[in-house]
Image 1 (cartoon, chains in turn yellow, green):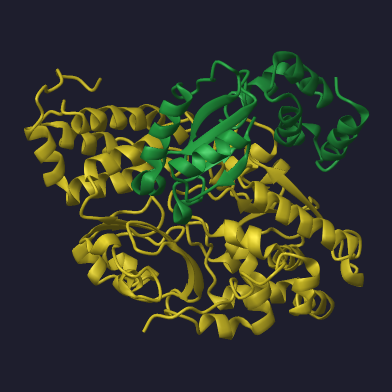
Image 2 (tube, chains in turn yellow, green; image 1 turned 30 degrees about the horizontal axis):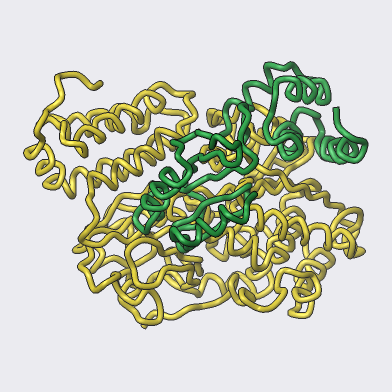
Length: 430
Length: 154
């Protein structure tokens, strides 16, 4: 039976939950203040590693392991960058934390910086989050005024400077090395790895980049212990996540649920989505933000929302952005919409992505608009084959996974459009 | 170029970074909020303020959709066109705005009141369709809701 486990969202909806007074009344900052006095940084890293927490931004790498990559004794400053560029289509969870309970993020930043030895943190938020920026800046200002940030925060002897940094509307800046270049005031092209940011990141110094939801988990995990967190949800992929559901359901929204639940139950349950809108039939679900492989209705019926479950259907949980499409969805048109996104957001650094994403849009556009050719589906797969794995960052991969999976699983819809095409385009990609 | 209060705010931003250039995007946001867009003389001023070349400012301004290198109307609209909005009324919202304002993407109304732009996913998928009006988000919009917003924006 599917149910909510409210950890990050426990205080969502309380009046003034975003204020310091409210957060402290609920015990806020007690964990940070206690642990900074009593525990060693490496103990906190080990605790987070043992909790099994994985990054919530999309890639799903072990948070504690990432932290442990910070080299010791380089003599350089260490930086924490919080990734609040939330732009993956279908994802709207980080903004809930920023708007509704930002102090838990600030407390997470304090604990994380202490654990990794950072005295400077930059909180990178997309500038379209006007309310989130105001709420988080308010929380940071309140924390400074209360002595919870700055020199010897809370009398612990630990110094920490925190700065909010607005982005300017580019999806690519959610890619961690692009975010670093964006923060440095450069044109935000992703960097080649290695060197990894933990070794050579912001301003050439060791840097950890973590997603907003990841960091917001830290006070809870360190407060209640790794064993508690590791015991939530699926054993191989433990924890609780903020799941975003959008598209063709009766009720859309964000729910905090332990990993391992059945996707079909989330969609059908009257406590959650309440079924497909208008009693229509389910056609497809994008399970983890638009860059994950699409699932058919048959696959949805057997899918559990955890890493092993996603492996079985060859998709991924990504950023937990679930987009539900009912029988009225026109899959070639859906694909065109998504590919326009990637073409617009490609930074232009790598040729396969810069050229490939607009080519895909051109081919899809002619299929959708009655000018498709019989060879177009194979052409799309061929272009994808020349993009995936051939670029500096994963944006092109993220475009190819939905593209290829939709063309493969819903090929009949593309073929039907081509068959009905009154004016097939002449040969050539353009 | 700016009053003392704005200049002081910009200096405080610049001081938050070990190198001035890192303050570029935050500084450009403040300048754009004052001027409505980023005219060439403002970009040159920013270059001097951060001890970088005008080209370094240019290559950043031209990258980001939310930094405006052309004059815009008094109010700027960004409509989300990505899938979750598109599937839940975003397409109709866009068509309504195009009809009502009599402009296409990137256009400014003849009275200089509105510039219509599109945006990619605004993280409002659960409350689609959505748009920004002068940077503030409005969600669950229908034609009547949009009309009310437009009328309030003089």
